[in-house]
Length: 387
Image (cartoon, rainbow, N blue to C red; front, side):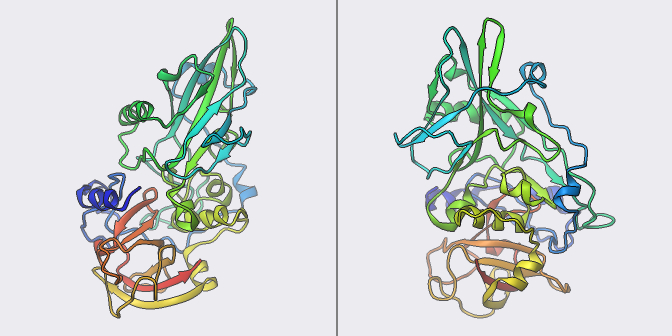
């Protein structure tokens, strides 16, 4: 994404998310939400530091059902996937990994081995990011943070009809992007769908004389969510930590997400998305689950100050005191714990000073998005952490 596009959309987005949660979030301050995919975000995120959960092993015992959006998914629910989607980036070698992480603008090609006499169809699998999912009670609910079991995440599967009969495709060409956007508008009306950066899931299906061969899809999901065997393209908006963080656009918001879910792009909350992206950046999957308070206590502090309406009580300069990718954690007024966390995204107004015109990237209680510091999401006592 280019910076001018981010700024333009940040100025143009609506108050939908704020209105949806205004009655529930204690520290709400009405603000114009902002990010580069026209995502509507609440003006004040909830307190999420103290989320409690069972171990990943205990969580696996919970019941889970996923949405099946078409007859094919229902008809092959118990079949075994036999097709393997291969991929390559910028004309490089074909690889058989179930997930790739290209940079925005790189050409991505997908293929499956041709089956003589078969007819191939391609599908995109899209999680419904218009909803807020939870494994634990939300902060404003009774028994806040109590583990309630793995949430059911809803998905839609939509055929990319323009690619029917093609054994090799480039799914991010302009024609297909238009088609996918139309599908998404009808499927979920989500303000959080990004067309050119973030994660995208695909499935291939071949029909040969009535026999269906397929790659992994919705029907292979379990109680933890979409199977990591489903082929995923996670597009990064640049190198480095922030680039890997942007690859989590289009991933559902999931309060109390477990490590397995965040590592596999199934669902994330404010702390888990930062840590999971760090693991991807370092090529070392995170095994320990962190909440906001743990990050503040264990990661190096580089700055500490108070923020009101996006204005710090001391001058902080970009490049000297803060930089993109630094974590920013907030303890709201009257609270003892740090409750929300994100990452500094950019000196959006280019004045060299950290202020209300700069962007932060964060999740919770909605999916990962960008917002301005002046919107009040981080008003309170701030610590800046070095990831």
